[in-house]
Image (cartoon, each protein chain N blue to C red):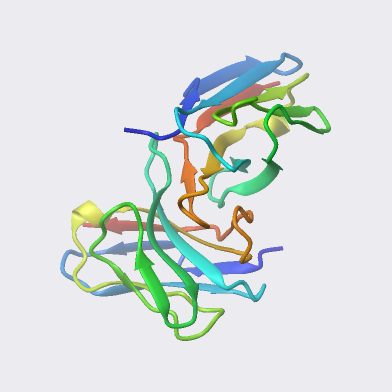
Length: 113
Length: 112
């Protein structure tokens, strides 16, 4: 069973719309991440958080923003969606120890038309 | 430039055959993880290797971490259709605490 939940699973939206991708985990993990995944490409880290009120940008520049007001919740927001934002977005969490394995959600497939 | 190079990118084999997937880098990793991802799902951890030269076995899957901790391999013996999936390696560097670097993955298809 999934301990980390992402909604929606699929989203098709027009250019210029504001969207929020939801991610929640029930494992009490301090660390949470957002990755972007495109076919044939490595997972790119776009945001991460080490705990409440902590957010950092990842290795891949992204126009999205995140917030971490509660330990279990790490939503990602795009203020104005563009076709270049079309991708698979994966949320993950991990324990605090360095090198702890990631627990991934099932992803949100975003298509911007 | 990818920090972790996986090869091959795609592998299609018959049930019962053996296969090996490689993960190579010029960087040293404090640990390396292997994940498998099935369509419509997120990656799921298979194994973590920490010590250079370490070999771990998970049923028909054998994972090896290179002596210099720069490379790893995954060997599947007598592959089954249930082994089909995208295999991802991910390395943890000591200078990027908590962040993993992923390879682009190897898509494995095992046909009956």
